[in-house]
Length: 582
Image 1: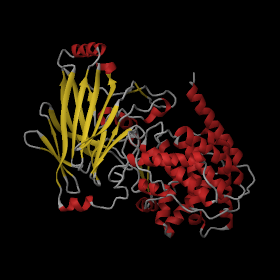
Image 2: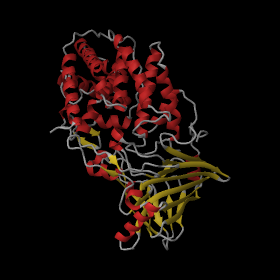
Image 3: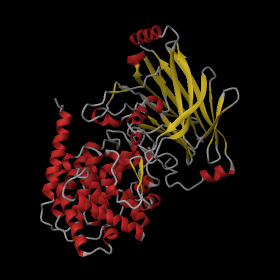
Image 4: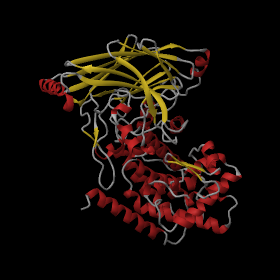
């Protein structure tokens, strides 16, 4: 018997197919653009050159098919198919911009019309259609150059068909990023295409409602995914710019959402310009975050307290970003990670301590591993994560995060010589009766981070639960591991005697990890997961291991900058448009 989720999914697929077929039967009205659209998307020149050469890297899979159309290559999985049908690769070809790149873009675009333009195929979903419309409109001048009249007519007819489909099916997109993509694409089309003006106003009003319902007072999304927040922010700025170009203003809810998100993104921005990598999000494409913030014209500084549930400590050229809230819940937990109280540290332009990241592009096993607590720079207890994954849904394959921390008290305060973060979570109370408390103190010059992790059994019922867990282990204690995952570019060495670990950054800086000497310090192999890579990158991780025997266990450790070479000084003095705000 099918569950409700599966029935809804099947109904959505049926409606998409039906509306796509209806859209292809409409009479063509679009003959051109109301005004010449201005490209706002940013592509990668290097990726564009690879596409021209026949190296197709999408969703973590590389297919080498020189001389073969992208539509003649069998997608290895659904994620791969989604990426190519979204046409974001057109940004990369446009970034190259030469005759060879234009020819590839033109061949692939009109081949898509021939193969999928009748309303069939995986590309006919609201979010992918919105994404595709934005690219076709952005790069219309690029792809139409030198084309015959028949090809231009086919191009405009397909634009109209996709716009009509989107006007009927945008509500079928899931709340969050997919719906923002669908509505932004519909606004682009309504403002740009002849005869489609009547579709713009409903989409503009719908986008304003989504801004009000999906963007909270902290300027965050329910998924708490920083990279997804950046994607939504970029779409909202594009839509606002398109409205401005058309001589119209964006609704108040739309502009207020942009104003709430911008300072939040600044809080989630590391000193190197990259995003913190939490809850399935990556660091973002090079320069994407700074470009989006500059384009928004919002100069508000980062908010006091938490931003989308993250705490930020910043001093000198060092940034520390901490997951300081309960994990996403409900539908938003499908990509949530058990990362409560994990942190990342970046020094200047060089990441030092990181989280492993999302392994989704490397398959189901890597995706599950990336979501577990040991894949984050925090404490894990007795082989347990601070939350666990539910069994995969029988029909969708989704794995929600359950039994996560429900209480995460946090305090951020100023000290005479720095800034202090104090937080705790109850993710281990039900299994072991223990609360994890973490204190992080960053010096005013950004050259030192002192940390303290504590495991506490506070209430009588929690002490009894801890005693039972201790008895189950034959009074040998409950093992805990405090992990510090290092970026792959960091070269770490365990000092003689095992009392400290030295870490050399490519900037020339040397950082040193030390601890209170009462626990076991190890340097082991680790992994760094990036969606833009073909496979996981080898890295190192510092592991501080101990045993909890009593109702209160405390571990102290520190990270401090030991030296920096002349190369390092030059590297750290590079211009940073948001340095004062950091």
